[in-house]
Amino acid sequence: MEGPLAEAAKGERFHIITPLLESWALSQVVGMPVFLKYENVQPTGSFKIRGIGHFCQEVAKKGCRHLVCSSGGNAGIAAAYAARKLGIPATIVLPEGTSLQVVRRLQGEGAEVQLTGKVWDEANLRAQELAKKDGWVNIHPFDHPLIWEGHGSLVQELKAALGTPPGALVLAVGGGGLLAGVSAGLAEVGWQHVPIIAMETQGAHCFNAAIKAGRLVTLPDITSVAKSLGAKTVAARALACMKDFKIFSEVVEDAEAVSAMQRFLDEERMLVEPACGAALAAIYSGLLGRLQAEGRLSPSPASVVVIVCGGNNIDSGELQDLKARLGQG
Ligand code: PLV
Figure 1: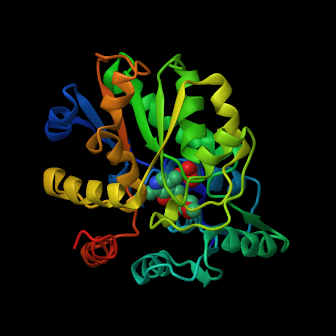
Figure 2: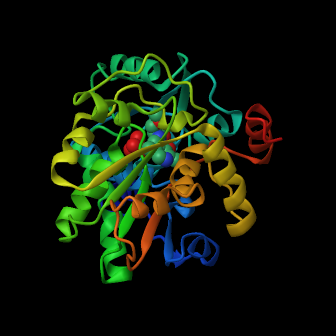
């Protein structure tokens, strides 16, 4: 496994600088320029490779001999990809309902796949157990400073591409790693005043529940179809971000996330998973306009950026199933 290629990979960048493009159709919806940050075109299909890739490289430098990652899918694919490049074996632990296409992708990256429990939290417990073995390291999918540091690169790219700060930044929240990383990135480039619209689906709304309670809350179950937003408890760091950043936490129904997926497919010709549909729903559902009407967002911001977080948990058949389940068939 060890070799010159694996050694070089410790200093390589695993993510790509993704395109930031103005969407004509989305700009029409809100009457202002909407820019899409296309994280779905990352080599692993989502933004996760930024933070996970960085985390894996750092532990590889410290002599890690086996990587373990629990995941709703996308963090696992990022970890398996990084592990293969680094020449380190990986075990990815996912909930039982994980799609065959995700399992195949993981196996294609050379990872061992374990399916356990109904939701991610259960897979996480198993991963923690496995990582007790000597030389094994658990790569947490969202709750670690190295993950946040890695995700921060996304904001540096935004700054380089836009120059001036956008009027708002829309992203999806699962366990809050993307939120924590983007917040850190905003602070780093001096854009900490940029409002963040943090989107979740009902039934995977642990961030919103925590804000309402004023402390971390563990949801009894994940009932949303957006399984990759399905952490029962948000990272403490994400909740702490509320103090230092202007964050609007918003929750949409599954149906809104899924119609956003369909509309995005029709208008932008790209298929994303429900987690990403939740972010897009901020535009399509009129939420942005509502925040402006309520005076909470500037009425004429220069632009809005939506992070198209992507995701592998989707194909045309799955989209049909989701629509049928939600009465949109
Ligand atoms: N997904 C994690 C956690 O799942 C995973 O294991 O892949 N958008 C997409 C496409 C995602 O895959 C995720 C996280 C998010 C958004 C939310 O990111 P987070 O967890 O950093 O808030 C249970």
